[in-house]
Image (cartoon, rainbow, N blue to C red):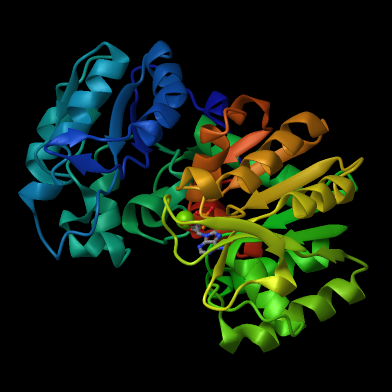
Length: 392
Ligand code: ADP
Ligand code: MG
């Protein structure tokens, strides 16, 4: 457990809060404000405590200097709407202009620093740059779980220079992921889908060693079926990863983890909503056709394997869920999990989107929105932005 917000005396203090407002923009507006909403509990708590709140985030990948296209102006506007209070956008993330905005903050007021990545020293975790950021505040809070796998000046360097704590969103992510991975109540099921095994080799290996049962579907499952000699015709798969699939099987066998693969699939000649489709056993895909979803016998087998499980970690959809005709397997699995009574952690942008589309998001124990940080946590890696925070 990391030191929490409640352990900081914030009244009248300048609190530097690293948030993850790396949101998609469209036509000068925030297209999806999920990440902004995730930070509201921390911002509200600090305002109630009378802190002078100094928010900082990166946005996109500026090329070594200021880029008006990646200004945080649209983010400040959306945050102000959500808070129902003004947000002072500082024109810079360090230096006199930023200092002037912070100096002008009353207790309970909020400022947002301009894009931290307008300085290359941010990603270099340059100590002098971290000191310039630290100069803006008395205390440091990290609420940016999605950026915690990067050791940057605003995520790692600054935490060495100020009394620090984890924000509420950060704490929620860590406690849910730890509950699933550190010492899960068993039986523990891991479910992995998505496009490619190559993105998630380390995740697969770690989960095979930890889980009691491992369900593999989606494009990922194809590679495992291929390794077992099934002819998947034109399905997405990675022949180079046959050895990896065997390694995962071996790890699972040693750990007494049962691996469940698809037995049937919804197939079509192409991934389009209008394409003719059939449901067939995985060994009977017509030549030139491909698996785009798991079939009903597969989800029935998943349901049987999930009987009585107490903890579940799910990453990656079971099919091309973006197209309604190939979303049913993922939806069925989402409903199974919603009714399972297990503590279910869903991680990965697409798996979270699929669970939301299936209408069962509120039945899940936790939706992890950390992207790369979530995957690295599941792999068992140390996240530098977390490691640097003091323990409770
Ligand atoms: P997450 O974001 O949950 O980690 P990924 O990004 O790894 O998941 O994978 C999501 C993608 O996998 C989706 O775009 C989906 O269409 C694709 N996908 C899943 N199953 C298949 C399949 N059988 N064939 C092709 N693509 C698939
Ligand atoms: Mg994805």
